[in-house]
Length: 291
Image 1 (cartoon, one colour):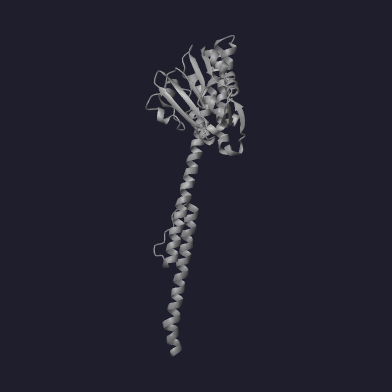
Image 2 (image 1 turned 180 degrees about the horizontal axis):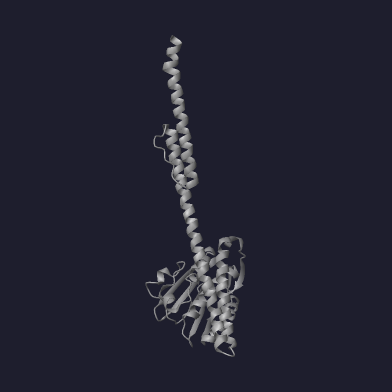
């Protein structure tokens, strides 16, 4: 009789409690699996003990962080795709111009062909540079190079634009040496020079100076509106000039600023509307050797 009472009052409730605990754990595991596969938070309506509650909180924090990272990656992928689509249209622009020239003229001037080809190469170089930024630190070679040699190579590369718009480069540089990666620094200077050429009027002058450890590229072009100036280094921002003149991706200055920061340089723009723009690239004192 005593044994029967013991079974009735202890063993049966224990078995029922054990069944409930197994059911609760299975439900918890099902919710955990669902949360993992569907990216949801883990919901425990009646957590048993501090351990389950602490686990639920910790899991939800990790899940929230994972979702934020995934959303960030998706947003970056979307921006990357949009930029590539935009650049593809920019590359088509000079090719379309060449096609129209060929249709309308029996003979196309060599300078016109060279200019459009150079524009296409410039846009392709920007695309490749944008792609290489992800592995920036694996593609660095620092060496001493003279300011005049570096700038003369870039001016020669874009001579066709100077000739086409009858713009004169006015140089005031020395043979001081700078310690930098010549390939990456050339990307910055080429973009700054292209902007000066693009927004300058014909038969004007672009001044390139070396002063106080700074390369200064100045034009007397259309300038930048005061409201646009703080945003010119944002990715994809074209501003009023881009809307009026077209053929602008808004990525050139963004890439230039990003490279300058990675190289430990300082890039700023100073501009007044309808008076011109000065792009200033400053080098640290320890990276300059005066001759």
